[in-house]
Amino acid sequence: MDAGLGLRPRPGAAWTGRRKPQGFPPATVPAARLDQNPARRPLVLRSDAGSRSTDPIRGASLKGLCCHKSAGMMGSGKTTVGKIIAEVLGYSFFDSDKLVEQSVGIPSVAEIFQVHSEAFFRDNESEVLRDLSSMHRLIVATGGGAVIRPINWSYMRKGLTIWLDVPLDALARRIAAVGTASRPLLHQESGDPYAKAYAKLTALFEQRMDSYANADARVSLENIALKQGHNDVNVLTPSAIAIEALLKMESFLTEKAMVRN
Ligand SMILES: Nc1ncnc2c1ncn2[C@@H]1O[C@H](COP(=O)(O)OP(=O)(O)O)[C@@H](O)[C@H]1O
Ligand SMILES: O=C(O)C1=C[C@@H](OP(=O)(O)O)[C@@H](O)[C@H](O)C1
Ligand SMILES: [Mg+2]
Image 1 (tube, rainbow, N blue to C red):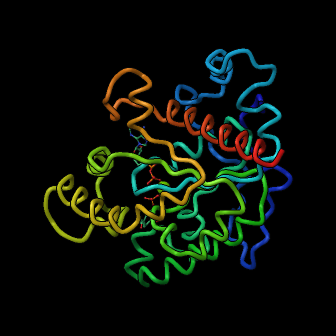
Image 2 (cartoon, rainbow, N blue to C red):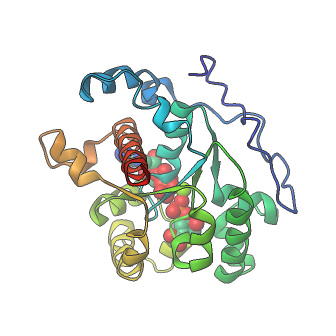
């Protein structure tokens, strides 16, 4: 593990796109707060995983990884959890929303929707995902709607894709807590933030659930809570979710290797 947690982009993480947004790749990715940092947890995971000669997180089975994309609904924690996973693996982290903002030169997704349109945002999102797809050793948090364009899957499939599956009630609570202003698709009507987020998220999920199910691995918060012996997804920490995601990634790769051999 990179003891400094400086998270400098790895040598393979070079921008190959046409337009190089200012500050991309960033010189450093802010480290997640240490109390949310599962970097020391792999040792704990080792005992969960029984007698293993390699670290399950950074062991040989993960060496072949190039990049991962986390998909999932708005508010599912792609950005939060993605940063932690990147930190544990010593990979670079990119948030496709941030890269679109930099590339377009407009500081928020909400403004991009307002000044241009959703279609304009989606075109730029696809460009960013295409450019990221040629990079190695990175974690990408996509925007929640990236899954709707089939072309984006051809880019996301260059790595391993993870669906963060969070119950709609929990999503609406999280989003209501921070407000809908930064999420233009949820910010259209007036009214109670929880109720409007829940209604819109329900409609979006209906349209998108088959697409999310295309991911290589699904991280279900309901399943993590059950493993912990309860059913309250609202108390699951980003670290616990990141650890589950890492375990799912490892299982996926192990199964893939077994099929190959
Ligand atoms: N496990 C969690 N428990 C509680 N709140 C969370 C958790 N993960 C993320 N959040 C909060 O939910 C909101 C959405 O998280 P974010 O990572 O931005 O999701 P996404 O990128 O999928 O939209 C943020 O305010 C974040 O702090
Ligand atoms: O689900 C969506 O269509 C969107 C999700 C957002 O990203 P997050 O999922 O990170 O909130 C952002 O890309 C945009 O507001 C549209
Ligand atoms: Mg995000």
